Length: 340
Ligand SMILES: C[S@@+](CC[C@H](N)C(=O)[O-])C[C@H]1O[C@@H](n2cnc3c(N)ncnc32)[C@H](O)[C@@H]1O
Image (tube, rainbow, N blue to C red; front, side):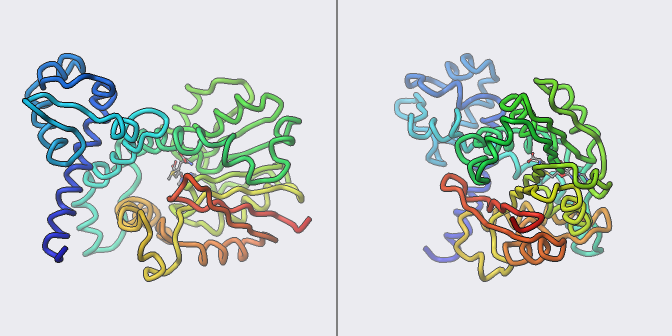
């Protein structure tokens, strides 16, 4: 493929991503899954949507290779439906593109003048993040994530104190609290909106949330287990937050840090299966929200080398990096306050 064709493909795929996001939000993939070949009118009725919009959307889906058409009747192949609905759905993350698009002009301004775009300019950010987190983190806790820390499940069953820093809408703590009634869970985030949502959706009495800056000191030596999920790189002062987490841990405490998979060098990210997407989300969200606070602007792709350097500077004694087979987006660092 020559470069001009590569560009055309990129524009087509960007447009397809936007339409996947729309289809996901209005329930078209769920409606079409398992449906016999149908006209646009039948699909619109089944989905309770406007036919004219559904028909145009189907045009994008057909030309994008998502939906098949014959004799004016449309069908979503089961293999595609399985990637766009249900537990293994990949549709949710398509929503990030439009959310980043909202701030394009503000980012253009920042390219010229510096500074950053604050969180409040992203109206659906917590919505999309919570959907992502419920599916890819909370949904993977038991099978994949908790086993990364030997003995953790047993300790959670016995009863320990846990805090999630930068907890967003609290999807992960809510799930852990349900699973382990003998343990106490806390979530901290500086977004009052995210914390209000987390409180309203808590499903058990052993989880509490507070709207607080992650730099506010955690009670010293109080926690057995501290987590951050995708929540260090976009901090204004990431090192201060890491030092605070270390301070909050008991001597034998463990810190589990989910951070975006990447090297700390652009050349090291060539071939990264999500490289362009992640650098784009970083530039148009993670990096800029940090800069908007007068922060460091580490960016989502700060990478493994820099992550290790920051953990060392924060005083942690050991760091183990893990990769999960089903997760091409993240590294999972198991970090200890002191050597055993
Ligand atoms: C990328 S989101 C991840 C949210 C959540 N951990 C999840 O996985 O759904 C980063 C979170 O960090 C929070 N955050 C950023 N800076 C913060 C700070 N200084 N203090 C507390 N929370 C902060 C944001 O409000 C946001 O909810």
